[in-house]
Amino acid sequence: MIPSTHELADWLASRVAAAAGIEPSAVERNRPFAWYGLTSAEEVGLVGELESWLGRPLSPTLPWEYPTVDALARHLTEADRGQDTPPPDGRTEIEALVAELESLSEDEAAAELAAAATRFPR
Image (cartoon, rainbow, N blue to C red):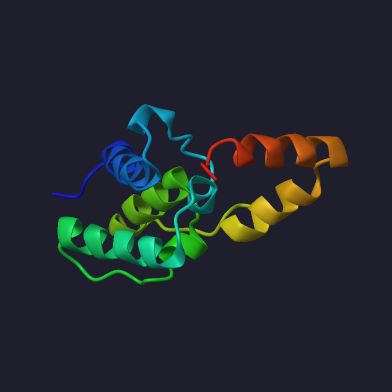
């Protein structure tokens, strides 16, 4: 049985939360994995866990191609159903996130950085 997008997102959020030392409910599913402090090695490990859970091989680059819980869950379920399509504007998820970051004012960017800095102990 192929898990639903919701089931995959819940599973991913629980793994991200465990790695970040937070509650799964605190995971904002549209935030990049890096926001939660996941290292490249942890992201590759996440793909390995996904492979075991889903019972099929996956590309180790998935967290970079689909860098959020929602994006990765949506991609995996759409790919399993043969419906995987690129984003409507033709940009990858990473390109869309970069464009979003570039659209922030200096004050908005500073606020985002300050918020991120409080999430991780020194």
